[in-house]
Length: 488
View 1 (cartoon, rainbow, N blue to C red):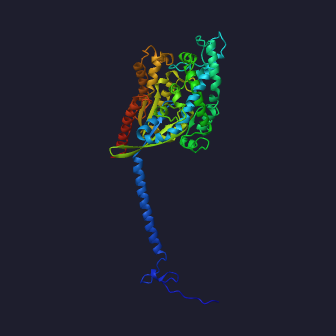
View 2 (view 1 turned 90 degrees about the vertical axis):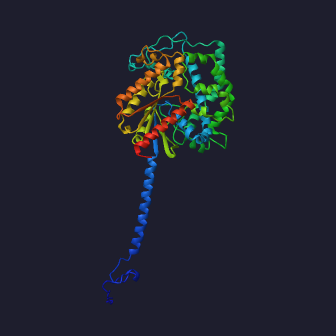
View 3 (view 1 turned 135 degrees about the vertical axis):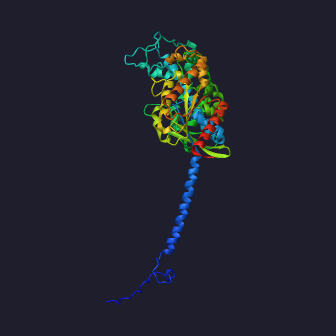
């Protein structure tokens, strides 16, 4: 049996002598470790506390603004206006990436013109191009009449009510020959439409057959990183490069088509409805088709893109010597995308709601029975009554007043599309006041917190006027944010 070695009371055979007290009482062998770890822990806690305080201060200086409204209401254009004012250098760096998007807008316009001409020429001579009545057709709501855009007439004719005989489109033999030649020459350019849209959209496609350029956050970076999209400064390859070359060689044909009497006739008869920015680009096709073309600010503001999801933009704003982090959220406005807005509602500082009052004669692409003014009013009602947004400041921009004035000047009558307008004068001041009253009434009846409503009539393409509104709106939102959060 091994010998037993006695251990003295109060001593540890394993503890270093340096940690024993004079009394001989056993001390923890890791006392030094405990003290050091506690000191480090305290330092970490202090750093975390400071970081937490820093983040709280940063959040208090963070102003989150959501741009809401239906598709094509001007949200992305307003975002660009903010970028021009607060971060012009960043927009300047993006200009090369807008080049193929501008080209796409022209190709899309050419495609629309040729398709409408083909459609009109396919109608049997002597038959009116109206529609037989459909027993299953449901009349729109009391405030609006049925759809009448060119795409709706082509694709939704069976769902429209019967109409009076329309003007018959019958070009002369010489005009037909010219149109045939132009069509043949422009077909290679138009053939690039879908593939260019796919390249610019990063491959996004929709099962319902929707076409166009659909962009998500960081789309410029995706285009830059795509080896088939860019090759060195100023040069573009891939489909975008092919489109640029095709546009350069087709510029005179595009100008001839755009100036053709048949196209003017179809526009006059409201059978051909191009996108709102198309005339601007078609008028400037000679400049835009140049090989060394670089988009200017007007080009960037006029370009048509469709936003997918929510895209965040951040701008530093100096007010009274204090820097604020202005975060702007540009959202997709189509009906199928509006659910994506909700996660951003709870901590939103302000809502800027855009309603295009020029759209009284237009209908939703997703629902050709719904007038766009009706949809804007319904959407504004939802925003005003949403409890998650009750603390958010509310700004309403009745947008696209320039287009409204142009339509009224051209003799397009509001009462034809908004039946409740009645016999009021078809003049800008009367029409604008009518729409303003309807949106004000929604706010008065449906707003959950009785907050103030800041209302502006706007044209997003008017840089100077919009910049003044941006300054006033931005400062008002920040000052209210300061008062609400206690910042000084």
